[in-house]
Length: 280
Image (cartoon, rainbow, N blue to C red):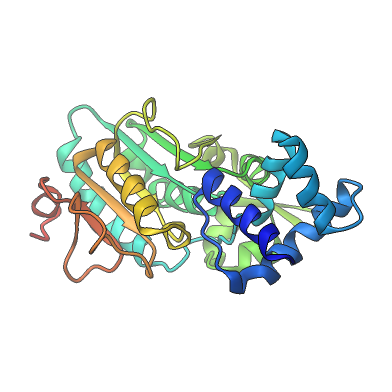
């Protein structure tokens, strides 16, 4: 790939999605965009770039952006953030929200839905406590294609085997041919919608818990800072933020601080979440 074509594509992707591509990732562009070029009736990747330069076709830009977005996800991924949610966050929310009985959770970069469905399953496991609550779980992603799969709630044998305990598979899924479909009770607990983390967060409302895992690693420092500080504005003062194991707020923003001894768990710097959870 020509240097100027790489710079054009990487600049467009950063502008549209925040994705940072270094020159050593040329192979990634070629492997993911060559099939898209052929699908669009273009013989080469060069032809795809030329069409983007000439037409600025929004549909094509969207397809390129979605093709380059990493959509790796599986049930109860890394497990620790889900254990912390169950053992610390939920008891704290029960204490703090017991009167209004309202809980809002946002899974940013939700991909094919395994993360928000995992949280819904944890709530369902103790449903006697939560059944009278107004619980809203919102899953968002920039890629509309993966959101359609998430909404369908249908997964392959390989996908349900990754992280999902067999007891939960039997309890919350039914087999349909070679696929497994999540129960309507779980599926109806989650709302999916497209959302770009580079956009304005106005309209998102206030959340008690935000999961934004394994997406900030693809952004530069300035973009990370902007996303985190916008998230702080829509997180309750006693709310909790979960990031991926390779992500941190340190050196990026003072809006959050890590919870000591609990990897990937962050709270507002000026909030009281740690005390509420008995961790401060």
